[in-house]
Amino acid sequence: MIYTVTFNPSLDYIVEVKDFKQGVVNRTNDEHIFPGGKGINVSIVLKNLGFDSVALGFTAGFTGIEIEEKVKAHGCNTDFIRLESGLSRINVKLKSNEESEINGQGPSISKESLDKLMVKLEALTEEDILVLAGSIPTSLPEDIYENILKRLADKNIRVVVDATKDLLLNVLKYHPFLIKPNNHELGEMFGVTLKTNEEIITYAKKLKDMGARNVLISMAGDGAILLTEDGREYFSKVPKGTVVNSVGAGDSMVAGFIAGFLESNELEKAFKMGVATGSASAFSEELAKKDDVLRLLATI
Ligand SMILES: Nc1ncnc2c1ncn2[C@@H]1O[C@H](COP(=O)(O)OP(=O)(O)O)[C@@H](O)[C@H]1O
Ligand SMILES: O=P(O)(O)OC[C@H]1O[C@](O)(COP(=O)(O)O)[C@@H](O)[C@@H]1O
Image (cartoon, rainbow, N blue to C red; front, side, top):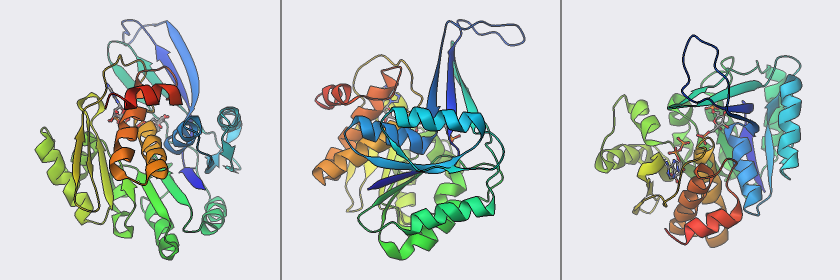
């Protein structure tokens, strides 16, 4: 089974405002509310591609109840831990001349609740895939992903991590099967601005040297790069299309990669499927659907 963990689920409030102006009352032209958070998006897209998973993580308050209902409405299995207090966050995505995002901090997670998650994760076996994705509430220490992988280290589970900065860097010594920073996050990890593909490959290799097995770097509309554990390097352009909503494109890419790998056992095919799935999400209001993914895959 595939298990996704979202420490910090959200309701994504996507608002379109023509010519947004600061400091005045603006009115929306269009608005949507979607369940969000990286692991949750991975679970939804996996389902759209025909793969079952279990969405794990923490929810709180009425927003948490709504998130869980919406995830279930997509046909996903859920096993969230309910927090005693606080509210799951509402992340605002403002689409105007530019795209801006305000992502919340999320509720506090107590030690007892964390322990409940560990009990669930300790039941995983080498047959399973674990996806740890997204930020953690500010109340938690930055070594939380690292601690989880340390406790699961002898189980031979294939782990996918989509996180930023130290949260990601600290897990590399546990040899995650796949990591997927974008090019900006990659630069941020090393305190540099990366401009060319050569520079991006140089720094992606550092993540491999630090322990990651396969490193997937997304670059939004500029394509993607995969460095594989057996030393191959792939670059792909993105398919042609009109971007409608790129929120969740990165998570969709992770889901597409996993689905492609489970279908073919080939990293190159997984890579192409990842790119097609990311772009299928970027080209639609909601997350990628299978028909659109397969149509784009044929062009890569
Ligand atoms: N402007 C775009 N045009 C085409 N595909 C896109 C675009 N933006 C994102 N994608 C697709 O989604 C994938 C992930 O996008 P990216 O924005 O890099 O991830 P993240 O959301 O993690 O920052 C890309 O590799 C690509 O396949
Ligand atoms: O946990 P973080 O880093 O705050 O990100 C959460 C946000 O990212 C998303 O998962 C989308 O991520 P991507 O656009 O990178 O795929 C949203 O659904 C959510 O609001």
